[in-house]
Amino acid sequence: MTAEDHTQTASIVHRLAQSLLAQKQSLAVAESCTGGWLAKSCTDLAGSSQWFERGLVTYSNASKVDLLAVPLATIEEQGAVSEATVSAMVAGLLDRSPADWVIAVSGVAGPDGGSPINPVGSVWFAWQQRGHAAFTSKHVFAGNREAIRESAVNFAIVQLIDYLK
Image (cartoon, helix red, strand yellow):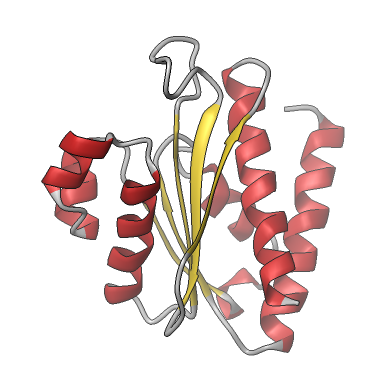
């Protein structure tokens, strides 16, 4: 990640912090392919403890089941990189935290592991506010593993900023 990329992510996180603080809301994240990058980006901002509640890296299927109560059948039938799985991830973390908002991310960052349904770069996202239905989205990002993961982090944050408006 270049200094410019870090500055862009920091700027996005700053905007997110302002939105969450203005609404007296908090955030938790459940990450798979981003491996904690989303939580790290949030906590890089001084004072983030005022709005960032927690982050879980649920990289393995077993961790999604154990920590987020994602039904094993969902993963077996739909795959770990699916709308059903990220929807279950956000619901599971909302049940296990006091956060107002949860973001979940699961994808194929590569360089291997892609499939016809989910080629390398495919990332599923879910955003859910407590008491409301989840929003989900799938995107296919270009680039190497780091670029895909960085794009996923920035997209997740920007989308939440839009939902907070």
